[in-house]
Length: 516
Image (cartoon, rainbow, N blue to C red; front, side, top):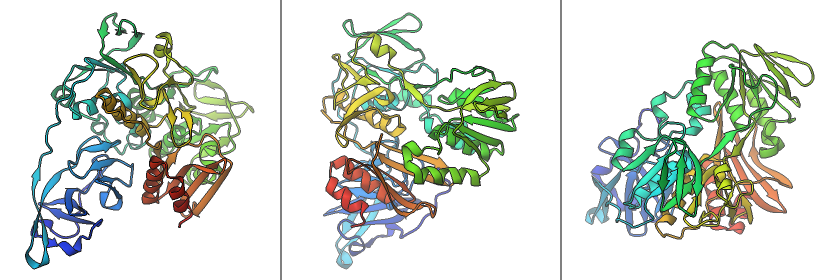
């Protein structure tokens, strides 16, 4: 998804002076026709691929933290030693090159041949592991278990009948027609065969924590050594007449996105119900297909409750600039063939209707099994649920967040992936506390908003820079303390804010947001 690779900087295979790379420094170059990032940490020098394996982000423009590098676009994190993706959303490792230091000319650095990371040490763990759900959390749990050395049986339940896929793209480039479907699966079937991850195309209907079994929709049962609940969430359906008509669509799955794309081939006028992130991204994607789009929502401002009045107004104006029409402060009363009637009596023509008014976590399986459930499956800091050998991750997990001091549940793709990684490591006995700051990005035409933290409420919203000028940092405070930070085209600052939250360093974050 990164397009044609452009090489820049020196040819590192021909060597550079050691003095060109001071301690803590990094240098973008190339070797053998591939972009290479050179990083120096004390006496150690690392050479890794310069492009993030997620969407091709420029790692040289990110930040280096200890022996890792973090991507400025979507905050993926890689080991400089092995190239392994330490944190999602990247799933593929970076290429690693051997670095040679020679003493001539005062010291020089040469990038030599590519090197393969050592195979993981085989580790024992609960066997088998059954993962309920093949979304972000479930897929990452399975991948990480294998990457970390788990050798036991591994089953991934995929109720949609699809291989794990890139869900954020469903409302963005894929829906807009800018990303072919072959980009959507996270891996081909060969990957799962090679890593002995059994894809079971069935839905879990019952969980017995005493017998340690999962019952499937075909009536069969699976025994488990550990079970990971990663069932995700389902979109909310509106209880209004006509909501089940054929031209009315929800967007959660790949099948949903395919259905909207097919309907868009014949449609001319679209009504999007809901000014959520999904609703606005759908609006932008369908405008890219030259459809007339009207967004209906009860709020006075799109996303104002989440992003505040300043960013909410910016997004409204941005969408209007691209031809979207808003009916804010209004609700749909009825959907009929070819139209949507609003609660004030206005009738909007609509060949296609997309409803995006939120999701609800799929907690029924956990609840019926007797697990503790309260707006999600309650888990501890290691993401363990309330029964032995049961874990939960992703949209259904409600965990104690160290930054806010509250128990929270977050419906973000990257959070779900990172929780899957933490669950996998803890299944192998690592005792890793989930302390990652929630992060998401939302794309609207040529503008991307990055958001770190979790502010369900705030007392004050502070803006540094210019939102209208598309260069801003927005801070959300609750009780005088920073709860979240949003940025527009300030990628490094978004990474720095995430790092401060991850470390629990409020003083550093305060200095940072004040530009000190």
